Image (cartoon, rainbow, N blue to C red; front, side, top):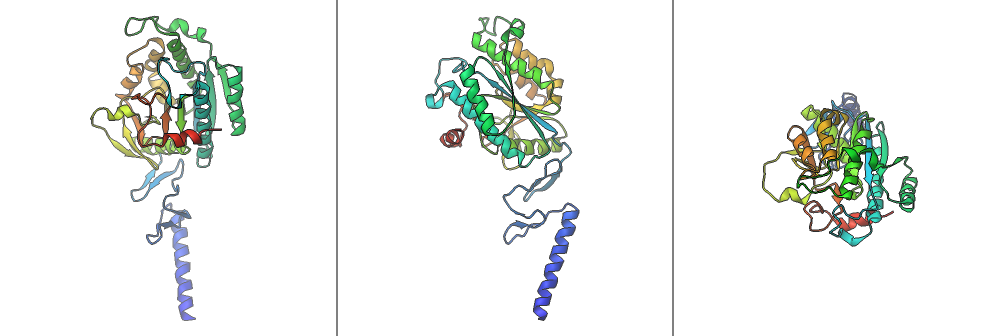
Length: 342
């Protein structure tokens, strides 16, 4: 009986200690089984608390000073144009609408997954579409119904911006109609971002997202922005061109992924309204003149602001398999393609 009493006393003391630690915001870990009693979870599960603290074992806690209020997701779609340059086939050799549907479907699944953790964030979804056709737009709408998510669809009118685009590009050649459509769509997306109150994710309709993509991006934005005490740009893809040359970088720890500093990206990225306002004219210049590379204004911004991408990739750009802007290394592309099917 005495032995049972001692065990009972020990158990009581442990429970009391856990309650005290939980009250003061401390985390405990049982090294025998990696159970975390203060969070009632095990190692490998998410124990970070949005807007409060980012926790990584064994590095400990980062206090969140930059919490996220909202996320506006602006999707640029155009099922009519198979490829911007029209001279290469995409992976899997499907019609463009198939990539659009799978891209949106994977993104919506990622949004629903992120909502399980970021319950206080206001998610808004806008599609800026250019001539995808009524049949294709109905297919897009059906995906939103399936995922139980609201969205706003805007039909792009290129006449609204066409006159602001320089007729000749960096090569002194006439800008193609496809590129004009692309630049107008980016311009419209930037204008819409002016209504955002916090973060904006600009995304093209040919990126397949992992389910954990947005969850990781949001947790990482809070963590790194709090550590650096500044706003960021997050790119979801680990592009193959990043391995084409040896250059110095910096490695950061996100929620479950490593992130590295990059100085180049394409036009799919997440950032804040503050960054958009700060570099408004620079962003807008990408819509008025076809630079080389096209994203040169973004790269100039990255010389001043921190831009990072994940290792391995959280989203894969579905372009030609031989493109340095396409398939991310060390990702099961076929599996991701199949999982993104409706």
